[in-house]
Amino acid sequence: MRVLLVGAGGVGTAVTRIAARRPFFDLMVVADYDAARAGAAVAAVGDDRFRAERVDAGDEAAVAALLAKHGCDVLLNATDPRFVMPLFRAARKAGASYLDMAMSLSRPHPERPYEECGVKLGDEQFALAAEWEQAGALALVGMGVEPGLSDVFARYAADELFDGIEEIGIRDGANLTVDGYDFAPSFSIWTTIEECLNPPVVYEQGRGWFTTAPFSEPEVFDFPDGIGPVECVNVEHEEVLLVPRWVDARRVTFKYGLGTEFIETLKTLHLLGLDRTAPVTVPGADGPVAVSPRDVVAASLPDPATLGDRMRGKTCAGTWVRGVKDGRPREVYLYHVVDNEWSMAEYGCQAVVWQTALNPVVALELLATGAWSGSGVLGPEAFPARPFLDLLTEYGSPWGLREQ
Image (cartoon, rainbow, N blue to C red; front, side, top):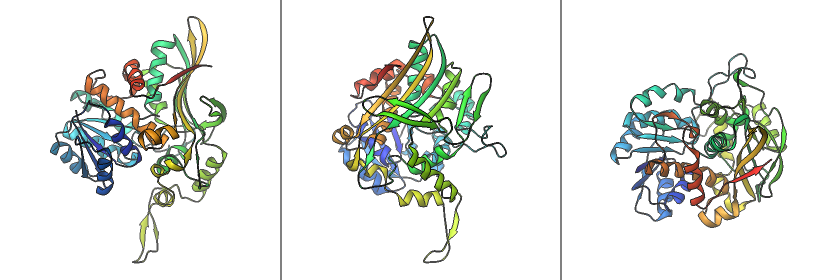
């Protein structure tokens, strides 16, 4: 397997460090708009299977040419969601498979944003599914940790743990702190603003997909491995759009443990218009400059990839499932916990970016060995779960199951 990894930020760098320990690929080209960042990621692994290149992720022709130049048969997208569609199209143009960890962006309903869906996450990609299927090509979408591993858990629950499922709810929580900062998100603030301030999506059989107000339906969820109770709220996320396509469940939700302080900060950003992506004109040393308010917020905060040495605690991604088995009610939580102290000592990566990066590498290995195969635009739950979970354990990062 020959891989083009686009994006050498925190997650992309973690991908290289995880993949370097595995033998399933012959070449991984690490490409980034910042050539120095790509070079640093490659230099850090000290493995001649890796090469660095510079590329603009928004330039489809350049990405397709880079795939052809190195004979890459798969593109792994480790950029933010703004670049999903150009990279998705570039892979199809070059005849390569495609993997991402976040799907094409949504747009709220213009008149009823908190009742009806507008353009949903992934709609632009699924609109091209027939083209991929007819070509016998695979786009594996939403293959990070959430979405990604959480979807694999949903498939596993449906196949092996339940006869019928009432609700699948992704529940994400952590007890991470960052020394020296009052506010320092552990993941991309650009993406966090996008998913937390957009109208959350809920799925119900008979009703389909619909939206609610941001931060709706608060609940306290008790997370394992010492993390404990965390208040979680509805957030827009890909699992709600993916799981119902392949798994039979009466209701699907996603709730994120944000905490009161984080929610209030996001509300303030929205109130001030600092969550907007459309450029505004501001004075500059050489005259007026057009800048995106959200990009300014992101540039003003520390890079999450650099915070590992200051972080303490654990992060948990998981899937809560309620249904029936052998005629009796059953409720379980399937989960994956990463301790930041461990991920820093073992890989030099902070826990959240390492946990996100781990899962596409596992998926790439399953594709390389033929344990997973398919064509079209497919989510993780379209594939058998057991090979993934077994390989995840082999990578030294086991998952857990808790009866509720």
